Image (cartoon, rainbow over all chains, first blue to last red; front, side, top):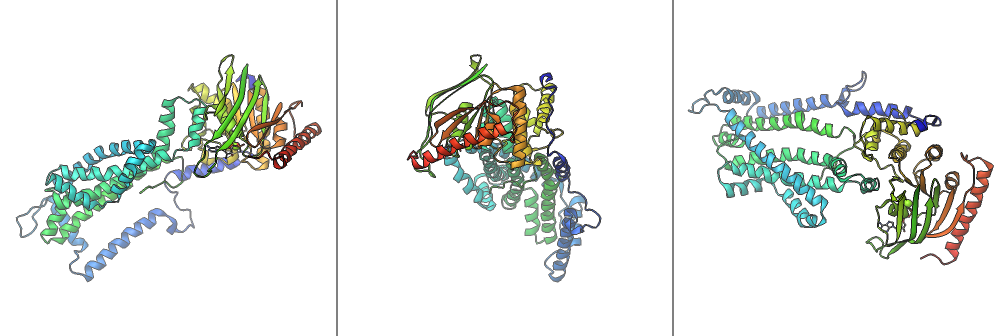
Length: 302
Length: 255
Ligand SMILES: Nc1ncnc2c1ncn2[C@@H]1O[C@H](COP(=O)(O)OP(=O)(O)O)[C@@H](O)[C@H]1O
Ligand SMILES: [Mg+2]
C-alpha cells in the first residue's frame, strides 16, 4: 500500500449522487416507508390492503343478507367456536373438533414440502445446467405444471386410496414442477458475462458455484418456492376433500355433506387465513431478505 | 517481468443461426509485448479486438496459433476490465472486488477500499452495484482489476459506454494508476485519442482481424488531451486509421 502513499486521485464529479441514491435504496429495501404528512393514504399499501379485507367482509355480510343459503359471519364464527371448544353441534351427537384435522393437514403439508422442494431444486439445477436434461425434461415439467390440481388429487386417491400417502404425494407432485421450473430459469438467467469474468480472473470453482451459481439462482428459486407453498396447500385441500379421513379438506367436506354450511365456510376460512398468514408473515419477508440488493421485479416462470 | 506473446493467432467462428456464414474474427495476429508497457489495440468495431482479449484471458479458444502470458516463466496472473462493469448485482462493491481475490482478510478489505479511492470512489464499499451510476460501476471494475495485483492487465474499451465527460475523467484515473503500477497492459479501443493518450505503442487492426500498422508513441507522461504534442500524434494516427478505412473500403479487402 505504501508505494501509493503519495497518490491523490484528481477531484471529480462525485458521490453526492451515490450518497442520496444509497439512502433511497436503503429506505426502499425494508418495509414501505410510512406516508409523509400530506401524502394520500391511498398510496399506503397497508391501508389499501386493510380496506380490501373490510370490503370483502362487507360483501359477505351483504350476500348473506340477501341470500339465505349463504351463512352469515356470526353463524360461521359461532360454528368455529364450537369446533374449537369441542362443544356440541346441536341436535347431533357430534362434538366440535379443531386441532386434530388441522394438525393432520399441517403434518402432511410439511412432509410434502420437505420432500418436494429439494427434489424440485435438484431437478431444476439439472434442467438448467444440462441441455440434454433440458431437452428431455423441460417440456414434461411444463406440461405437469399445466395440469389442474384436481387431476393430481384423483390420481393420488386412485393410487393410494384413503391413506396419508395420497395427500402427501399430491403435495410433492404439485411442488416439484413449480420449484424446478423456477430454479432452472434461475440457472439459465445467470449472466454469461459474469461467468467469463470469473474464469478470466481464475476464480476457483467452489467460490464460483457458491457465489455466482447459487446467488444467481436464488431469486427465482425463492419465487418458485413461495409459489409452491401456495400451490401445495391448494392441492392438499382438494385431495383431502376427495380422499382422506382427516384434515382440513376432509372436515370442510364433512360439514358440506352434512348440509351444515356454516361449518363448511368456517373450514374454508381456516384454510385461507392459514395460507395468507404463512405467505405474509414468513415467505414474503424471507423473499425480501433474499432481494435486499435489488428492487427490480422478479422473474416468475409459469 | 511479464511477457505476452501472441503468435499467428487465428479465430474463425462457425456459422450460427443468425449468421449463416462463418466469420473470421482474427486472421494471423502476431503481437509481442514485454515489460512495463501499455499497448493499445486500435480498430473499428468488429475487427476482432474483444475476441483477441478473450483468447489472451483464456475464456475463448483460438482456432489456430498460440498465446503465452508469462511472468518470470510461470503463467501470469491476468486481470480484465470489460466493456461493461460485470459486477455481481447481489454483492456489495467490496464483496465484488474480494470475489476475484484469493486472500480474504481485513487487509484485503482495506486494500479494496484503497483501490476504490484510487478511482475516486470512497464510502461506496457497502453499496450494491444498482445503487451506483454506470460510470461508478465501471470504476469499480477498474479497481477490481488492480486489486488482484495482476502481471498482465487487459482492458476492453473500458470507457466506451460512458458519456464523454465521465469517460475523459476515467481515462485520467487509469493513466495515473497505470503510472503508479506500470503493469504490462493491453488496451482495446476504437478511439484514436484514447489510444494516443494512454499507449506506448498502437497496433492498428483492420476488419478480419489482421494487423495493418504498428505505431510507437513516444510522448512523455502524464499526457493531457489538450497538449499540442499529443494532438500532433493523434492527428497522425487518425490519418493512418483513415487510410486503413479507405484501403479496406476500396481495396476489396472486405471478406
Ligand atoms: N461468439 C461469436 N460467435 C460468432 N461470431 C462472433 C462471436 N463473437 C464475435 N463474433 C464475430 O467476430 C467478429 C469480431 O468480433 P469482436 O471480437 O467482438 O470485435 P470487436 O471487439 O473488435 O468489435 C465480429 O464480426 C463478430 O460478429
Ligand atoms: Mg468489442
